[in-house]
Image 1 (cartoon, rainbow, N blue to C red):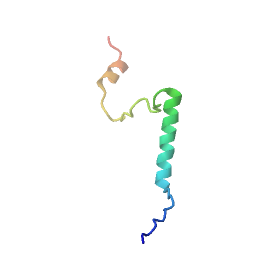
Image 2: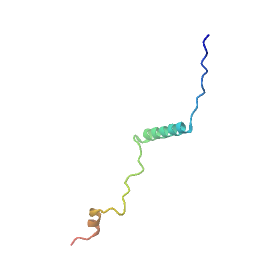
Image 3: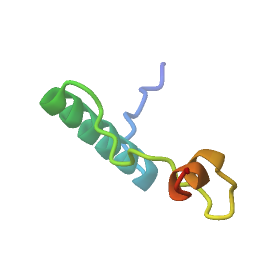
Image 4: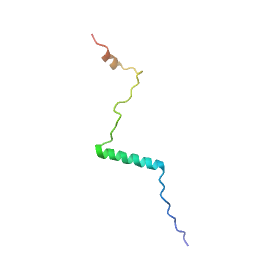
Length: 62
């Protein structure tokens, strides 16, 4: 006599739920705009970093 397999109930964890929501949101964004929208256009630059070109613009040339 064979034992019947008991079907397990589907269990969705919180991580699975968040991942599915992110994927769905990304897909909606691609459908709406044709590509992913990036909100951060410019990389953050440190104020302490030396930038020669910036200082050339600030100093008037004679």
